Each structure stands twice: as C-alpha cells, then as structure tokens.
Image (tube, rainbow, N blue to C red; front, side, top):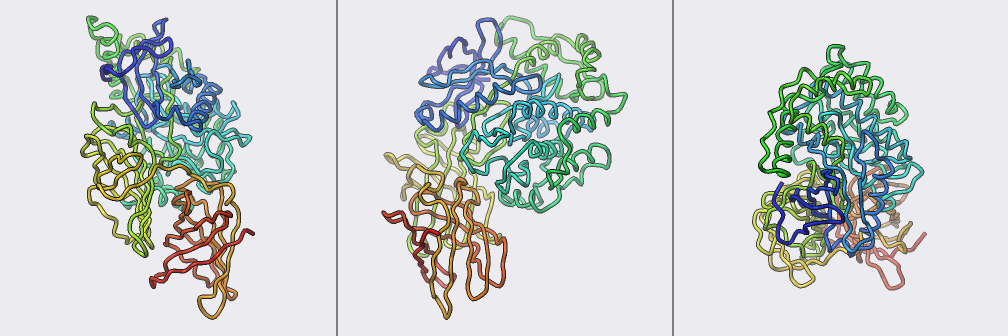
Length: 590
C-alpha cells in the first residue's frame, strides 16, 4: 500500500479512498472504505481506456459475469458504475495473497493443503458453472488464499456455456499452460475445460511449477500450448498417491475422461488425512503473513491503535469443507486478534481484474503491481505496430506497452523477419518520458534463430511511437481480420514446370493466435499448415508456424507472408523465398 497522490481522487462513488494499492495496464486500484465501514478495493479505469467503446463493453460484461456468480467461494462485486465517464468497480477487500505469490514466496503447499485447495476451487467452479458460465482462465494468479478458504477471481474472459463470449468472438484467449487442449485448438468449451485448468493449478500448487513448462528456459507461450495439446504433464516432483491421481485425471486430454467438479470435491475430501480434518488449511507461514497484513490495515484506519498480537503457528493443514466449520471456528477464537481480524475481512472479496485481451496473459498478484511516481508515460500505453527495413530485410514489429515502475515487465514485443520470428518481454530500466528496456526472449522460431538482446528505447513522437529514436510505429487499430476478408482465398502460380495452388483461410482469431489455415497443392502433393496472425492491418501479415498434414508437399513453414488489399477487397499474396526471390500470387475468394 502507498499513500494517495495529489492526482488521486479522495472518493469514488460512495467510497472514501484510503491508500493506493497499485496500478495496472487497465486502471488504478485503491483501498477504500464504505459509508458503513466495510473495507473495499476500488478499481478506477484509466481515462484513455474509458473513451474506447469496445473496452467499455468488455468491462461491463466482466462486471455482470462476476455479479452473476457471487457466492461463498468466489469474489462477489459490491458496487460498480460502468456508465459513468470513468467506469469503476468496487469489491470487498481480501488481504490474502494469490496462490502464485504464496507458492513463489513460501514454496509448494503440503499435500493436505493442496487437497483443501482442490475442494475449495471445485466449489468455486461449481458456482461459476451453476450460473451458466465457463471461467476459461483459472490460473494461480486468479486464486486468492484466505484464512478460511480459497477464492476464484477474474471474470474478464468468462464465456456463457451456451456460447456467448465476454471477449472477442473466436479469439483463442487464456493463459498458456493452464488452458485445456480444446481451448488451445479454439473449440467450443464446457465445464470440463475448467477442470483441466483446475488440475494445472493444483499441479503448480503441489510442485511449484506449471505442469507444461518444459525444460527450455527460452520456451514461450506457443511451445507451452503445444505441450498442452501433445504431451503429458510433468508431475515428476509429485509422489504417487491420491493427490497425484486426482491431478492426472483432471489433466486428461480427452475432456470426457475428466471428473466433474463435484467428483473432484468428493475425492479431495475422501483423500484428506483424518488427523488433519479439523486443523487450519494454510501453512503457518501464510497464516502469519495474513496477520501482519491485517495489522497494517488496522494501523491505516487508526494509526494510534496498538498492533495486534502476532498470529500463532497452527497445526497441520486440512481442507475447509462447511461441515468442519465449528471445529475450525473454535481454533480461530484462540488464534489472537490478528487472525480474528483477517477472518472478518475475508468475508469480503478482492479486486475484479480488468484484462487486456490484446496482450498475452501474465501472472499478477492479489492486486495490480505498486506503481512508482515515475514510470511508463500514459501516452505510450497500448499496442503499436509498423515496419523497418525494406525488401528481404523488411521486419514487422508489434509492441504492447502497459504501465509499471522500474524493474516491472512493461513491454511485450514481437518481431517477424523474412524467415524468423522472435518474441520478447522487457522490464523497464529507465524512464523519464520514454521506455527503455532490454529484451528477454520468450519464444523463437526456428529454434536456432538469433534474437537480439540489445537495449531498446520507445518514445512518443506526436501520434506515433519512435523506436530507438528513428523508425516510427503507429497505434494498433485492428486486432482481427476485417470481416470482408474472412473466409477462403486461393490462387495459382507456375514457378516451375507445374502449377502450384495456394489456399488461405482467414478465421476470426485475434492477432497472436493461429487464425490462418494454409493449404498448398501441386502435382498430387498436398500439405496443410497453420499460421500466426501477425498483423490484421493492411497489408495483412502472417507467419506460418507448424505443419498439420503433408503428402510430399512443401508447406513453407517459418516464413513471413504478406497479403496486399486492393480497393475492391481482393488480395495479393507475396513472400520472399529462401533463395531471396519475391513470389506473388493474386488470390480470389472461394
């Protein structure tokens, strides 16, 4: 928590603001107090985003989805105004860490705690599913740990079980490593997809690492999603037993083989050791951390009040089903003022995270990261793209910049060259009107591609973005292929002795997803591949990534391909061959 700044409002709606919790790419988050004394987390959308009608639609849908779920195991919304000039949402404040932060700081959960987590999350997902929704983004940073139970949060990409999306239609969106195989493939989802996410979250909680992370430090989002679809989870650090068996069943590739959430709850209860049934479900270090946080909250409200007594160490962990509530309540009555205060506060929920569907999903803490007084200028926040070089040396760049302070990862960056693709993230190393960072490679194709690690500087130049003070990029205005161009296009060329037909099918996926299918036919040879949508502007840009079917043909993977759009909405395909020759083929709609 940080003190309010001069430019922070003293009040939002009926809530008096007490402190700044942080700032993310979507808005500022404050600790507030209701007129009745309830502690709340208030998220205030950034003014520049409030002017975007599409963003306001998504924000309103997210709030409605969270309200529809509510309940004991999820985070209910207390209040919101999505129609005001600067939209905001208020949720009850929970001083608990995310599962991601808890495991990173204190290590994997013991088996009894992980079983308790399984039971609690299964109940939370049951509430989501009973509301007719599919969460689609269950991951460690979307699970909060309280003294009494885990809570499921963040309904930014929730989807109706009947098929109504609260994000862009057809986009493959989620968190790499926690999406189900059918979600990676862009198929229609049901409740079983969330069960797969639950299994991946439990694996992280019990082992300290995602089950599909692999061993390559340069392995990025696409490699992780490939492993989700094609490889078994890495559970080597988890000993045989009921917990491992439960996780393996949740992570079944075939959705029909996964248990439903009620079965997960029942199996977790049955596997809990008898001597752990009436004890606290959290490890002692986490209970103590909750007590310290509550002490800071009490001091914030009443600086002269004495600090609460430190929380005592509880006995071994156990799950918190409702039928065991009386025994656990008796333990809490003797745990000291700090833990009692935490228990009162955890009747409320924490923030509703507002996501940017255009940016790769990233792990976050219980609230947005604290923001330093100096950081990323507001004028640079958003997505930018453009070209450098010419001819065979031409490169397409796309940057997504979010707010943050020195040391925070504030940039995601993709560079598509003629025959290589590099993806990076960058932490802010200097500010003062610009963003300076050193790229860290997160994905490369082919695997032996030499991706640069030279520092880069981004600065505003009017309504453009200057890259290293020279070439300029423009703000992204379109993230999906224009509806006029979606569908199947084909054309025939004769580079050699026989004609080669190229066919491209543009779907509705967003930039950054495999939204394009390729088919090449020549003299009986036939091959199919998929391609990443690099830019949905004009010209369209794709990068072919993997072969899905081949009969003697050359699918020309690992290459940038460009589609020029004419005034009549027709397309011309072009690319540079490995020999350096420029190929072009006029395409017609099929």
